[in-house]
Image 1 (cartoon, rainbow, N blue to C red):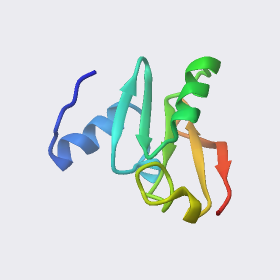
Image 2 (cartoon, one colour):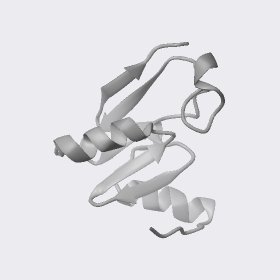
Image 3 (cartoon, rainbow, N blue to C red):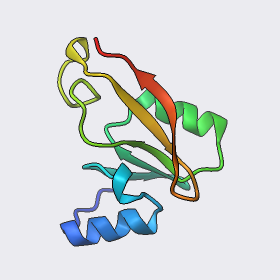
Length: 100
C-alpha cells in the first residue's frame, strides 16, 4: 500500500484520468487494482466490487455523508448511496444505506 499527497489541481486531474466525473467526486481517491474508489465507501462494498468484478471505473460516495465510514457514528447516519461509476462516466446505485 502506498500513499501520495497531491495538490488539489493534481488530485482533480488524477480523478478525471481515472474516470471519476466531477459530479461523483469526493474528498479521497484510492485505486485498488484497476478500480477507483472515491470518497467514504464502506469496506463491504469494496469487497463486493472486487468479488463481482463489474466492468466499471469503480465506486463513489459523493460528498461526505454523515455516518459514512469515518464521518461520524453510523447510529446517526444520514441516508446515502454508493454509486457504481460506469466506464462511460455514468452512475448507478450499487448500495443504498438508509438513515439510522
